[in-house]
Length: 200
Ligand code: UDP
Image (cartoon, rainbow, N blue to C red; front, top):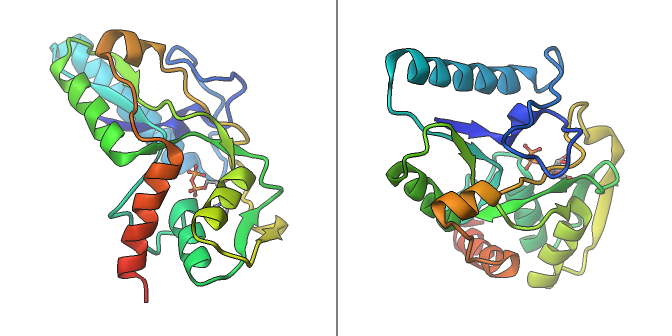
């Protein structure tokens, strides 16, 4: 079951361990997504416990890489498109909120390892260090030689946008022997190349 870091809501524990139950607002802006994924996890575990179904739950954090949708509004396509057009990158809020980004190949490797393991419970599969959206934007401007800088949009940051997101991945490392191999600048360079080939 492809779950998400969103099940933690706006977490109060850092980093987020798999055992953390989360801090999600049931009526917040993101609640339909958060609660749907929480319910899907609950159902998966119920089928596993009651019907003995062979299950795996993966809590996926922010993933990026070639073949992302160019216009889905998430931070990676937005920033790369803006940078390639030599426009300022749009930071929502103060940019101090953090995310942990994982390159798609590493994620797939982790999911595959989980599939082949005996782990029925859940495993989160991201490791790249926590980075603020501000630092992330600067990295993209650097890699694309974008002189246009940054632009702050305080009104664009929706309530419920998690302030910090960083997984605790010890179990994935010890049980699945999983370790991401693509660092942020290598992964971003490959993604930028992909966007260059497809952008107008
Ligand atoms: N964000 C931003 N500028 C953008 C798009 C997103 O500053 O043009 C911020 C957004 O407010 C959030 C973070 O980047 O704090 C990641 O947003 P995204 O939608 O990619 O994924 P999320 O992790 O919030 O699900």
